[in-house]
Amino acid sequence: MQRLECLRAIYDQLDGCLVVTIMGAVACELQSLGHKPNFFYLQHAMGLGSSMGLGLALCLPQQKVVVFDGDGSILMNLGGYTTMARYRPKNLVHVVFDNESLLSVGGFPTATSTGSDLEGVARASGIARTGTVRTMEEFARVFKDAMQASELTSIVAKVDAVGPKGYVTELALLENRFQFKRHIEKSTTETRRHGETMK
Amino acid sequence: MPVSLTNSGVVYHALKKCGIGLVSALPETWLVHLIRMAEDDPQMILVRLAKEEEGVGISAGAHFAGVKSAMLMQNHGFLASINGIVSLAQLYRIPLLMLISYRGHFGERDPWQTQGGGATEPLLRALGIPYSFLDDPAKVEKRIAEAQTWAYSSLHPAALLLTRELMWEEPA
Image 1 (cartoon, chains in turn purple, orange):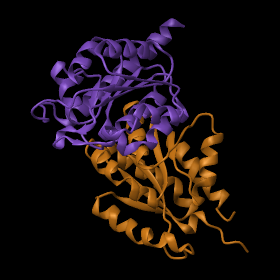
Image 2 (spheres, helix red, strand yellow):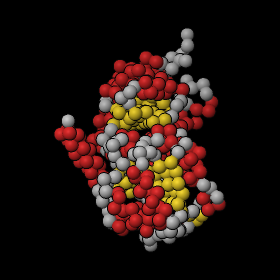
Image 3 (tube, chains in turn purple, yellow):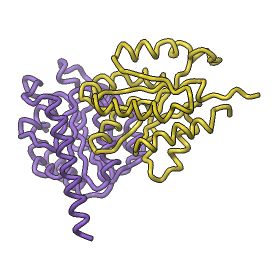
Image 4 (cartoon, one colour):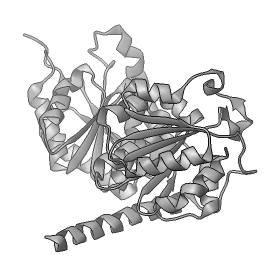
């Protein structure tokens, strides 16, 4: 299973969500499918993609938040699973693309290549809704279910250790940062206005 | 416990007055009252962390969500957060407000705090993070407000050092 194909399969479901990715192949490949103002690529700070998603999810409980994480990143912040589990925001979907390697720095194997089980860590941390998937069909089904569920979900998607040739994209980091912020300001104002007219 | 309840209250009140809606924290002796105040406040989102660096990500998320936040941590927690501070908060211009308990400075009796005490200010300076001291209850509110104002106008982390003078009351 390839990460790019996984992203392609669920790309249309990302409208209306806030999406946070980690650096490297995930950021590059999502941008290759088409950048949108609701996508933020955390192009460093390995391990903190999930923490940022948690902060967004806790502060915007009506807003679905999707984090595309990786094995190398989450291994730097395994404690983050326990924090997500502690607050279990219903609106957070955490996906780890596990290629068992640090692909962008030469493909050195991570601990998931020698048996460390990230879904097991997630579950043992207290996240009740978890899954590990190995085929496109499973991924598409489990992701769709997670998006419809009102429960924190952590999915480990086992993918091939393949990615793009380079990792620098046209989108400047700060351009992405300010665009994402403006997008949220606009969408929360609209939600508020809509909420007022509903009364 | 000789941690000042009164001055912890002064700090908490100042955070509330600045519109802080989320605090991330990892317990340490000087912060116990502050964390309990956040816990008892239904208007405050308190995020208890496994490691302080997570708080940088959580505060960044809060900033994007339009919620003002503060990190409560010991100076060793600041040391543990440096990569996140540099490669998220500074790289992406996040107005991170850090309240750091300044352990290991003069008056410290715990030998294990002393090395971190000596490293705190040099590291803040090396990172170009401006800081001021919370040492006088009469000036706490003003100093926190000014640090937050600067963090937002510069879009950069700012630090406040909680000192022994403010936080600790020697038992009679």
